[in-house]
Length: 218
Image 1 (cartoon, rainbow, N blue to C red):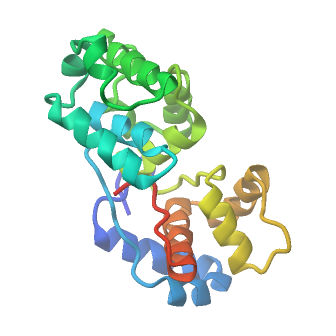
Image 2 (cartoon, rainbow, N blue to C red):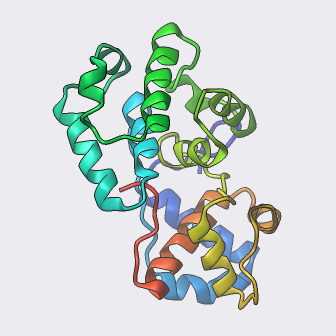
């Protein structure tokens, strides 16, 4: 699924091939895949806009997140330079929480000063990429992992802290108690180097069984 030191997901063929290998690696997932159906690619361009959209997506509801994102887009180009130039009173109209507004402002400054290279981070190994991302103010593991999965295309990332994934895995394996983040991360180790495929699989299984979309990026 890639020629680099780690695999990169670039297209639907990579998803299909990765799923085939994942099911050979863990045959328990075969019936789960049959229920889940085709797995979506859902890749977005890396950069400030990609990471900012993930930060905004962490709202109480998808509708709220979409509305906020439309306001941000309407304010001008979603680039670090343009966002950093916005007046505070303009940012206040977006509907962001104080914490998220601070995170986006800090992120725009980090990109402008070269403290983070959101394109370059896509071509380095996952653990180092995660370390650089979570060093930024307001960027936690879930945000960093989702960025690496859906903007960088990393094939071996599993966001164990995602509640929908915890629910989906617990349901799929008939667990009495939903697995914790730590338990889920440990379980997912056996799906390496296809953990991003496994995450997509369990998000799709969640959507099929719960009748509710769970993917963190549209």
